[in-house]
Length: 405
Image 1 (cartoon, rainbow, N blue to C red):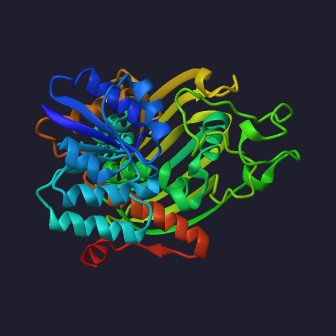
Image 2: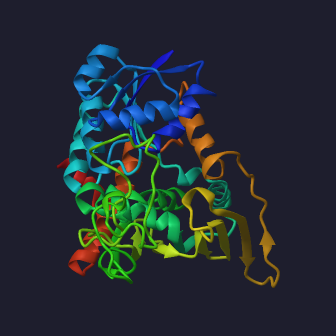
């Protein structure tokens, strides 16, 4: 029985605890929670139905509970700290994406991995496990359209889900380094996975167009629950006070705050090391949520489309599901596209979480599991997008040089 500790009681960790308490309860047992915010731990413990020791000090938790595996779900900027400390303590760890948020953190993780190569460590990139992604991977590996020449990836977040990032700590660059890391890193991982390669050069542009100082009205403040305009503001938000039992943080920050300093839309041109050219874009204020991927090969084109839901209800928890998934191949010389069947999954993220957990919690993790190197490569693409927007120039990525430093 593996003893598991949760380090950082973020919402994403609730999916992990549910899996561990259910399907994997015969092989794994949660023995501790650790978070710097006691109130957040209390709320998380209630939501997850856990009755385990809670700690605000990492070393005391490790010394007292002797976990075999750490699940790291802190605010993004702190992932690297706990990955490094886990590796140096010879404790296996799984970090929620992104693995880290800047180059110095990449260097520290790579150095710790070199010091402790025998310690299991992984990144929980779930986007590569979506049924459409698996279908695309199988087609590309089978040479369905010959050599891949280009890829176009468009991601849209609807107005409710998109706004949710700007109500939380994600909207401050010092905590997340932007959606380029927090949200897009697992899309970049999926692109690397599909193409069997990694980004070599990135040119990007982006801006904050819909949130922050772009308020269509005069209302702005710090948090909705303390704002004097909350009864008038059409964007005032409520939150689960039972879950967020905290005096340190509440997820109802004003989406019109002038302190917001990340982009809500960006686009990037990416040259991969294997010669494939790709484009990627994200918008966090669309009327529906989904993604479109086009892959052009020497003998044809694959088009994949996923629609997840619409926010017509205006409520994050009551969004209207509009599931639509399709994969089609357009072959040169044929006027009729070929529809490709998709093996649908069950559960959250279209079944991606179930597939991810089956590999993360396997007694012998398979080689398809996203490694620390995979996590670093995805982060490097996100950092390059951020830096290209900031500097207005092409950013080159050299993983080998980084790994030597």
